[in-house]
Image (tube, rainbow, N blue to C red; front, side, top):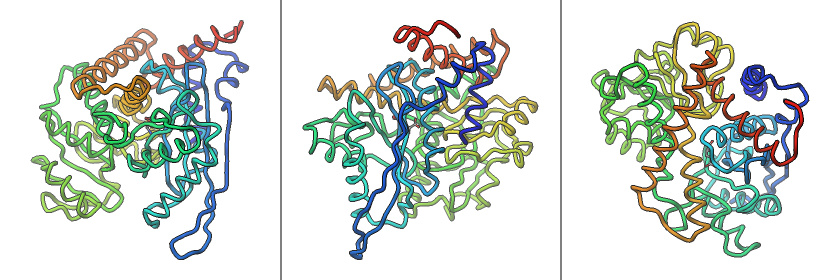
Length: 411
Ligand code: GLU
């Protein structure tokens, strides 16, 4: 994954005329921490896990990014995702750098007690390098507001009351209105922009979604409420489709009970992977990275792809899709709604003041639409796709900040 993201970085760096030396400075993470985490499991035995935190770049502010609990977590993967956070916070112009991390584990096979112990040991190990003004974790794949609450509690044991050390916390524990649905809401705004660009609106389109976790389910709900027709949804367990449009509120109820969209009575079942080539106007990959690759990109039927996940499209697939004239709204722009409302949460924590829903929604919409317009403008003026344009905007902002801090005399 790291080499894929670096390839996108280099395409924009070529356009900016950056030297190899500057590229290497921008790509090298500031700090990488790898630590063994030992906990007692529910049977009284000791289990050992490996945790990571990669702090990529802090030229624009404290580093920001999620924590992922997944077997695929390793140093390379966390570094790739940390660099994406640097570019993502820059595209939407938040005063942050980028970081990412997590624990190589399978939370589906662990009890809540074990997860609580593991999270607490992780914070105990990382407490010197995270903090409200240095590095602020947040939810990502398989982590949620409950785990963020545990992080705040454990960190505050060492450092005193510190709600701003982590975002995505429960509402009753210094969380923010609108954070839970933020990534899905951001996806809706960029889709509206992309459709407007083609002279269409949400009410006219059919949508297929891969993944029904926080991002996929909230995107589905908000798009459904706004009048789009969600015709296919799939998760790891299976898929469900209805060409007249799925009843998303009912599907959400079903998934809350069964933890999968499989066997939902309001549609026909299908094999998970087929969702990527579903006959729909819009495809939203909102699960894991690398799902659109050389082997399946030519089968994509959608004309617009909104990258809800981080890194869902490999460079080979990106090229095939470009040749097919598919408009891709890249991850660092499309899913930036989450970190944007994280920023609002952090700002509220620092001010000890709560914003209402309306303010969150208005500010989020403003930021997402402005970022889309800026990226679109660059894509038109430089004649490049939205991904290269988004990296271009981001790299330039990081460079400008670094330049004013350290004085870099060359590009
Ligand atoms: N994990 C999310 C992302 O990849 C959110 C990060 C944050 O809120 O800091 O953007």
